[in-house]
Length: 253
Ligand SMILES: Cc1cc2nc3c(=O)[nH]c(=O)nc-3n(C[C@H](O)[C@H](O)[C@H](O)COP(=O)(O)O)c2cc1C
Image (tube, rainbow, N blue to C red):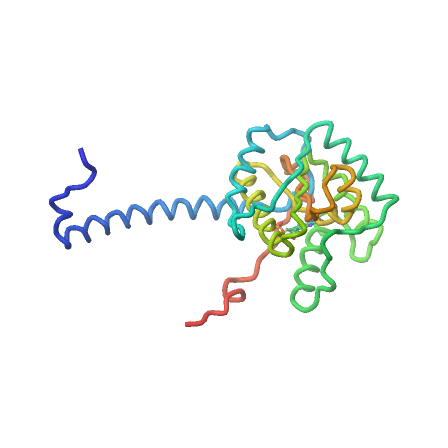
């Protein structure tokens, strides 16, 4: 049995009726997909306190499997990730902590030269939200420094992914990997796995190259610590805001 009534399809009017119906079905499916995707985006947040429970390897594979579908220039797929689990995460955490005490930051990617205007304001707002949540008083540099150092404990996460890209692909390789990082974090959220992207760790790129044997032909972009959030930790109790669509889009026509 064919799925269509071919007699109806023979007339142009009938064809329109059938295809319009298909379009309707397509739109319902699209709305469901939109809702699922928007929910995953809404549920993702930067987690700054993890429980120790590991993420099953099958779920990590699902996250990477979906993230690899990220669009990228020429389908070069520049992303590569080192993913640690179990004792390897703890060993890395300890070594990174030592490095931060003795080494100096030297990121492969140049850090922003300055945040001015609205960017400065937004940066300040999210910093204040974090400090308010964890009880760091304004101007308390010791306490804010202590919070910053939590980056190097991987916020106690059971896993970290180190994301790197071939140097020869330059800024577009970095751009493609940025998409991959977003896809990784949002897919993780859809599976109930929490994440935080961390430039703070990539600041110690020479150490990361040595420690994970990542060639000098690659640039280290960021880390993603991941696992399951500790919902009771104050560091996880705030959410950042975003500018409205009208502030983003310059509509023409
Ligand atoms: C590439 C990248 C690097 C980041 N580096 C850090 C970091 O080193 N430490 C940190 O606490 N948060 C870091 N973040 C998290 C951002 O501060 C966070 O995404 C932003 O404030 C928006 O908040 P949200 O992720 O909770 O929506 C980073 C995010 C991205 C995408």
